[in-house]
Image 1 (cartoon, rainbow, N blue to C red):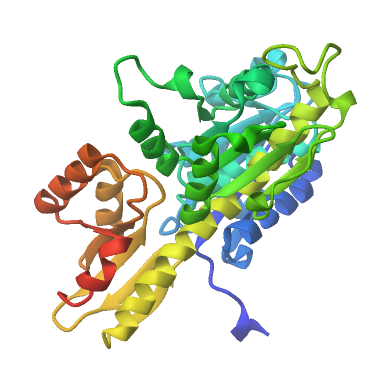
Image 2 (cartoon, one colour):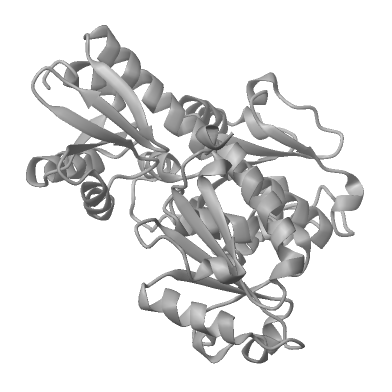
Length: 391
């Protein structure tokens, strides 16, 4: 049985007086996150109690402190926090109420921006932050909101504000594009960088050519779509790949549904929407990553090259002259991403694989400029069939 045990690749330390009651819920949320992202949960070691101080310093580690003002931290917790902080470890303080934050965490964690755990459903956010801190998911979170102004602008702005409160960015047409900017190309460029599309499907939405194109672009990118269907409205077949939430009249605040701009959602309905967005994000990133990796692997094998997955988001391509480690990148390519991947590749040449769908010409020119000046090459998935013939 020991021979079949998966090797530990990542570590998560659980600290705090509430760890014994919160850990089972956290493990469940983290395991679900891993499944949606296509990552093997068995390669994450959950460290509790004395095992925290014995963690492997060669492996990435992230930590969570479950605090409460009614229970002080143990001396072991304080020592573990000090040790982890000397290693610049990400530590997320989680408390029942942020109003009593300073009395719920030890002195070492008071300068950190903590999180309020209002219910066990919020554990999904704790799992997401852990996933991001381990480098398994990008830390930037961007949602693209599609809607019809006449009957959904109130809801769209509500979704926009609620996402902002949860540390997401969201793209909301004129609210997100400066004056004097060519609107449509900028819209497609921002959509390429989004994690997920939130579709407010009110009657007449898909009568818009632009909205229909946004859905088509999301499909081409492999992007996840959370579709909110208005009461009495039927889904369009073109949205069949979406995660659907059927709204009822009682999900909206009181008022005339046909008023200009429509109505806002009640808090309970909005919570369901946010939970769906959080849950679908990992799947969305996984689908886009797998789509690019599949294309690259096909081209490389057709060229007679050896291809293998050597990590969660890492593809090793052995060319005729050179070996590359290729990292699929979701959204915009930048120098920071290049720097991080260069560090991971170490002595092997590194390349970033990206989807150019919808990107502005100026951005494509910048990506090519980076590729010609940095040790990390940038490969558009649409050009991958030619690239494999050159290595």
